[in-house]
Amino acid sequence: MAADLGTFPLGGPVPAGDVVDRADFLDRLCWELGQGHAVLLAAPRRTGKSSAALAALRRLAVTGTRTAAVDLFALASVRDLALQIADAAVTAAGGGVRVDAARAGERLARALAIDHVRVALAGLEVEIFRDPARADPFELLDRALRMPEALAERGGTRFVLLLDEFQEARRLGGDDLLRRLRATMQTQRLTTYLFCGSQAGVMRALFGQSRQAFYRFAHPLELPPIPDGAWRDYIAAKLGDLGRGATDAAMAVVLEATGAHPYDTMAVASRALYLVERFGRQQVDADLAREAVAAVERELAVVLEAELSAMPPRAREILTHIATASPVYAESRAPATLARVLHGLIADGVITRRGRGRYAIGERMLARYLAARG
Image 1 (cartoon, rainbow, N blue to C red):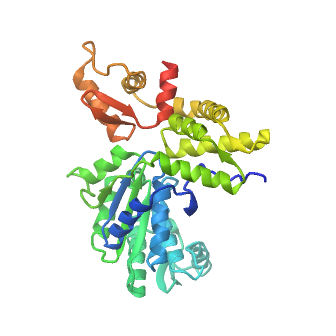
Image 2 (tube, rainbow, N blue to C red):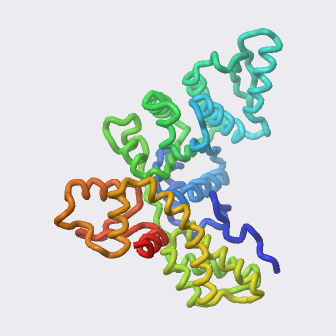
Image 3 (cartoon, one colour):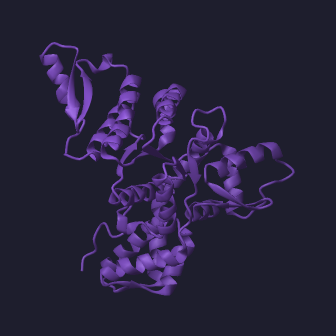
């Protein structure tokens, strides 16, 4: 049987059946959101954060909760954010109507030579300007943010809105945008927000520093690691669906190399499946697993090097010491500077503290790359 290209999905949020061992976490996350508690979920990219968040929305939707998601990463302005939120809200209301109709409304206003028109989208009245540039973007945003609440009130249910890569809000509109968002959000009864972000340190500062607009607005939840046993079961089941299998030794090779990191484990499993298909075998053995690991490491080298190049030299130095099990602190280095860099790496989820003077790199393949590079 030919392998399905989506057997081990990569490159974005995964389908419901590929969210590995998040049941307990999703129970807690859905409970918090169902109680009306805003939640903060901050974790590095490729760790399954967005997949877990979207899985929670799917669960909530089954119970009748209205849900929507907006990704701030690709947006360029406050106006874009306003339109995306309005679009997501109207789409969640059903009926197949989207705020893309706003473009038609703009054309109608120009054709009638009037400043603006009002159109009904999913039963909500929306004002559309002939010249969108004349509309104040923050006013558009205020109106967009009121739409989920109005829809929830009309439907007698809760509305949960996921704002992914929320750290990008400052890029879109600075502190003015953050203050405007908080001012509207804190008045809403039925709209609950799930804030996700891949720059963990920035996100924790936004919600944890008293001078920030979102100080203590959302309850932080930690995304737990996925146990090796859950990965073994998942990989075995996916291979089994294709009439393939993997030895215990092969599974050990994969998980030792990836450290059960979600993206890296999926990548190695996908490459192993490709090799099984290519060589016409029925089972992944340890040798084939090692070949898959080596192939993924070669592919990731470009990405990892780019990430390291973007870091300050002292951070790269510290990471290399951790990867090679060398002492992080030494007499020749400035302890205060090292402590500050270490704190930043911990805040961003790059490393974790394992004890006094002991640290570990969160992504095993990054550690292996650094150790090999020396």
